[in-house]
Image (cartoon, rainbow over all chains, first blue to last red; front, side, top):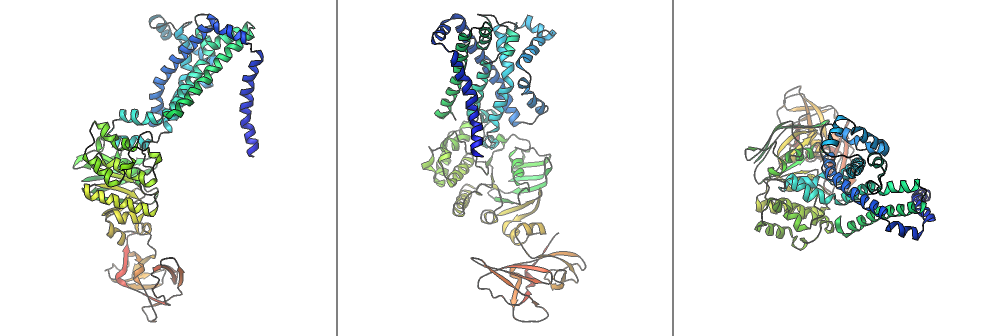
Length: 255
Length: 335
């Protein structure tokens, strides 16, 4: 039994490792250098890093209290909220983008577009698309991180005289830290790779709304395989880099 | 003085019903009871983690039933101790004072000294032994001078000798600092050793409460007697003012208490009520005793008609084929 189960685990390596390695079939160092030096690619990289970071910060700012509330308190509609967290996962990103587009064609959406901020085909639109896609997942991760912290720790903190805020910041948050770092990294990586909703809301304008995944799509459409491969490798290295940094942080005693 | 008045707590299908309890200042009060009796729910209700449906919690005459946990000034040592793993021992102990913005006073030094944890202050809880963790958790709860210390089976994971050390430490601290404490235990020896007064909680109700020694010697009901491990409890009917007919024994026994004729009773025949004799007369019963030799005492079992008896006897105690009963040692129980 042990062997056959381990073989199944190795399938992970075979599948994802194999796919990554296969990209190198079209890898060309010259094209990679050229891609990195290209203003359009660099714009995409910067745009992706900025939007993913802003979307992650916004998502986490809300996910921290929301995840905590879902982990600790009983309140009305809690189950409904819990179910809705998976909404972006069950609806395809393209449909999610379309839903956001439809929203901005409603009276409220139109009012927001003309009086607050125009999200369509803009930087803010990318952030919004990424935020909507990752928010539910980040709340789920943060909730899981707080679920891991025994509620007795908070009770103890309060019996010792700490206010609920002190107990949250001095006890719950530090104890959930490793889970929250995981949530940050995965949220950020998911935002960085967001494609469908971004395409719907922000479009594919070079030097304006062309994020890394959009750029991959555009270059593939143009049959520019070498640049596509370079862009894929950049995206992969950011994702794996983030996971590596998170691991280092945890090992350095952030746990 | 801490008082619980008609406290009712509902948690799903489980309920604590009409809990009345008063704990005097400087008293160690034990809450005994089988698993699922509601002991931890009671602690959570007193702490303020669980809201009671009705009733009052009074501290020195002031009501604190709906007060937030942090305002109650109750210390707590849970079963898992919940030492903050990200803080050192010292930071754990000083957590409460720091949260309140109070500088550590002499009490901190005294408690640390008494508990013998001075050398551990800079260490992380994960590196401590079970007994050391217990000490730290206890001192952390005491350093903020709680009005009531609540302990939820804190010593249950320790081996016998460590347990004994912790009991002595707790008793020593209690005497020196006049600590008022309520502790949950299912260890009857622990309750006997530590508490002056005790309550038995069964199915969400306090079924008996009073002086610990008396509670152990004089259980009020069959439930309490069963919980305390008593054997030889039989249903009986008074056939006169001082005689009970025990149906399973198919015989009557004389009792010291005054009875109401024809009323149903439950009689507890304690170990020391059974006398083995060689005499055969109308007051003795012929038995075929079986002796199970245990390490420190013998377990003697025998039957009188359908009534099975289980007696714990000293190794030296003579076991014969006739028994009679010392009527002063009978004890009557409520159903």
